[in-house]
Structure formats: C-alpha cells, structure tokens
Image (cartoon, rainbow, N blue to C red):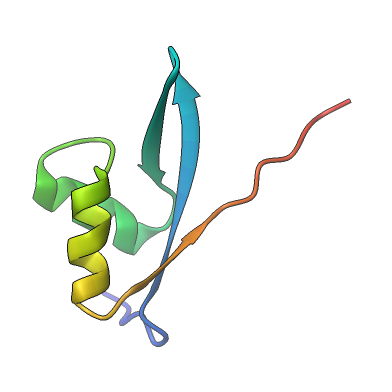
Amino acid sequence: MNENQNNTIMVEVRDVYGQSKIYPVCGEAQIFAEIAGTKTLLPQDIKRIQMLGYEVKVKQQTIGV
C-alpha cells in the first residue's frame, strides 16, 4: 500500500436527483468510504477526515461540448 505523502484526498461532488453527493476519486478516499460503509462520503465524514490531517480537494467538473 502506498503512503499518501501529502495527506490529500480527491473527491467529486455530483448532483443526484437534486442532492449533492460526495464520491471518492482516489484510492485513499475510496478506503475512507469503505470504512464508512458507503459508496459516498457525508459532510461529517469529510470533517472527520480533515481532523485526521487530510486535505480534501474537489475534482473540477468539465463540460463536454
């Protein structure tokens, strides 16, 4: 297992039926979701992850034209 050198995880926020959902993008974020027992992370999960010293970055959305 690779140690996350800079303690940064990447997530993506998607609109699902009018509600924002936080999806893990990187491996470390996926592990946090597995620990939480869900496919998405809740805002309180993100707060706890930050309390552990991780920076949480949100993947920018792109529009295909």
